[in-house]
Image 1 (cartoon, rainbow, N blue to C red):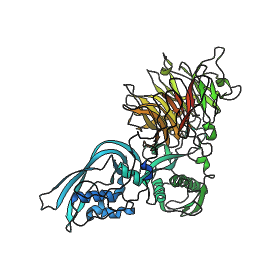
Image 2: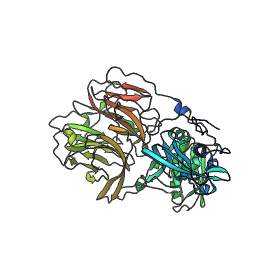
Image 3: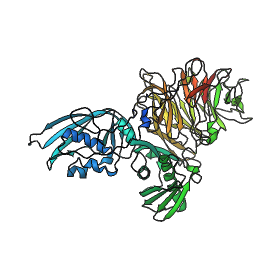
Image 4: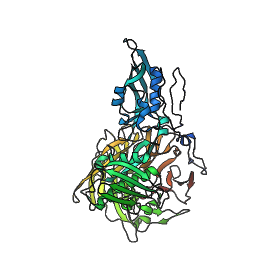
Amino acid sequence: MRRTTSGAAEPRRSAAAGAVLASLLLGGCAAMPDSGPVSKVEFSQGAADKNLQVRVFPVAPNKGEDPRGLLAGFLDASIADEDGYDTAKKYLTEGAHARWNPEAGITVLAGDPAVGGGQLADDGGTTADLTASGTQVARIDANHSYRFADGETKLDFTFVKEKGEWRIDQLPDGLVVNQTNFRNSYRQVSRFFYTGGDTSAPSAHEVLVADPIFLRRRIDPLTAAAKALVNGPSDWLSPVVSTALGGVTVQKVTVDDSRAAHVEIGGPGYAGGPQFCQRMAAQFFYTLSDQGKGQIDRLELKGPQGTCWTNKTLSDQVAPGSLAGGSAATRQYYQVAATGQLMAAADQGEGTPVAGELGRAPAGGRTELGTVAVRRDGQRAAAVSADGRLLYLAGTTDGDTLGQPVLSTTGHPAKPEDGLASPSWDGRGDLWVVDHDAQAPAVRLVRDRTVVTVPVDGLAGTTVQSLKVSSDGVRVALVLKDATGARSLVLAVVVHGGTPQAPQTRISGLRTIAPLLTDVASVSWADTDQLLVLGKEKDRLQQLYYISTDGSQSTDAPLQGGEGMASVAASEGRDGGTVPAVLAVQTKENKIYRLTGNQWRELVLPYEVNSFSYPG
């Protein structure tokens, strides 16, 4: 299929409407007003999604095509829906055909590349050089992992005449594509790996962790996902995960009419017997289920030493999010501003105080409480004193009391925000907290009543303001503050080690995942591979964004929040298939809202509220 563009040459272009991959500000919103009634605002349903399924057919080079036309045709053919890139290779010399590796990665540009050069060399007009330049917005590496990019890039191409026709003889490995065509030709899915071993954990509970990747939409996506899985995790995630698929090769993936996937593999046998085969099958099952979007109910794994099968029921214990807390993690809690009481929210009107001391107003000299974080199972909570000096643990059943603090800040905070802050629970029962001591800021881990100081690699002059740890306990979102007071968002991995008596934990691999945001107010885990972020770009209003854990935007229709929004909350937990509502607290009047569908609805209460959150 030939498409024409402006200019003297006749290049081919993939015709697909798409959204800006790296840009975080898009149309479509659900707005929460600073005051007055909450109004309904429709989400944008523009042409981007509707046109993402445009099939692109490759076109071979025309006879007598000049270098500029040849380059345009090659770039189009290289992203066409063709397995093996056979047509694109027709634009190359025999030598380049043998050397070029299209699987080396993808350079994603903001728009079509600008082509420069084209002067013939002084060799009788048999060679020519062109450069393709543009603003790079992303890079997909050879292992299919996304990285944000920002800056100009220039790619060199050399052309020679071969058998009387111009052909490309020197070119960079990989593909070059504008972001519109990238959205048309590629989609994001996740592959899954097991949490790595933790020698300090009292008991091991493996769970699968999402590793987002980008694959071609229409070129055998199931086999592509399976092959990407056996290739191993992204460089960023690999230090904290493991795989049962070392040395495995994928030969074939098919799905039958009964919604069963059949995966044929080669390589090592099932060294651990049937149980090891089940571990392998679970990785394939969740990876292909994510790719198939509900099209797979069962997976059969066929290898050199036999067959095993799994489904959601059999692999549920290691399922992504199985440590998130289930239905308990979808319960909503708020804290009364005047008393610090922790309340379990109701659908309408006032909720009920949680059992135990956390649900009672302070009396008799009891410590006034500030931030409270409920454990994911709802059976326990962490509470920071109102002055930010002390951290308590308390149950949420009748008779539970605060007891003695498990941690105190190393400093002497003049105001609460200079002390302990941001308590967060992972699904293993570990509690994380930030100490804002100006002289010795730190992140601390509390396991039972053992406190571990957690080094954070790569802070580079910034300090940790807040954190949210994932349910699997191996990833953590950090809000960092620099010397100017600006707050940025990074995602990091958590490396566990040591012994049960002396646990050792380190945060490393800091990766900026929302670089276009100049200020980040709040972050929450919305799914096992997705964050909900409240932030703003320079000179723009504060807004809500769904961001994938690889840093790419997860949706084409972000939510818009007013400048009065102070914090947001989401949950990894699920009650059946229901996704919990987004929660928000408004700054001016301390009102709280739920986002139901595409409409913000106030939970009307007779008092002001400090926080509105889910467990975790």
